Image 1: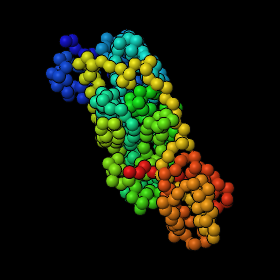
Image 2: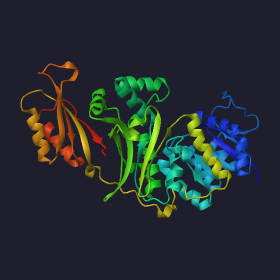
Image 3: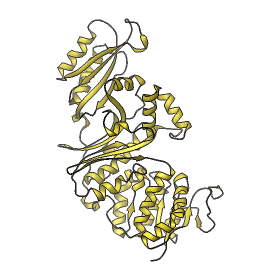
Length: 431
């Protein structure tokens, strides 16, 4: 077979790692696919930058779209990022030309995945994106291929290493959110503007892709309820520890009677669950099917981890693997109906900073009873050694109830004038 000519758009950390890995594994890839795999063209912003790569034999394009439209390539590897142009234009141009695409761009797929999959079907080109979700964890192929015999009921996971690093440091070292965020930025785990990560949007983009693969729906990040971690305090994580839980930012998609419930938010999970024990920048994805239940754990980001997934997709292209991008033809992907978050059922952790005066506890329990919320426990704590006359923290753990009932009860408690600051609510996943 002829050489597989790779066009690489983007030579940042991941792009450079892919280049090195293809060189390092060239012999093994040729032996396993029957053809040589080589980067023959690249597109990147700064041609003068020293990346530690020998680029003397590759064709250089200033414009990635030109690479996709005109380059003498057999596959386009898009590693630029961003949900718009030039990434979108380059990917679309390659697919329209009938050239397979490998991408790690979750933002692009979350916004335009259906359109790109339609283009791929029209031209017969493949659209591959294992690296777009959970880095080196092969969750895309697992859902699309390995678990094809299962009816998936739920997929959930830790999909953002930045948030997991922050929550792990807070819990293990008793540090504040802001201290841990600053350290994450210093180490390069968090961007200078960390909004995309800590407010849950990165996780939501990845969850949208997993939901499509698991349930045969159109990719739609707008159908996801999103809540980040910036409001969490050390007091909440310490309370969770005392109660036998760890707090994780989870992306969850689950089939319900009213549709596919998709949500991203901080969650208390029992300490003995495998996902609760995943620490640092590591990712994890749990899949519940009607035949098997499994949890995959691995590095969720970084040059080599992401490059591993990218090269795996290039390997599939080299051996001629075919298939629908999201497991089904686009015309058979159902609209992602958003299950109302207000109908969500489960346990809740509620922390109320209240004025420490007689009758406060009675007011709280009465409002909970008004909404038929049963309490598993109620604990009052004095934060930071405060005197009894000052603000107290009342921590409630509920039995299974609805989001709507919890929100109505909290609103009533606030209206009663006993709450001194914004209440904290964390959903609980139980056995």
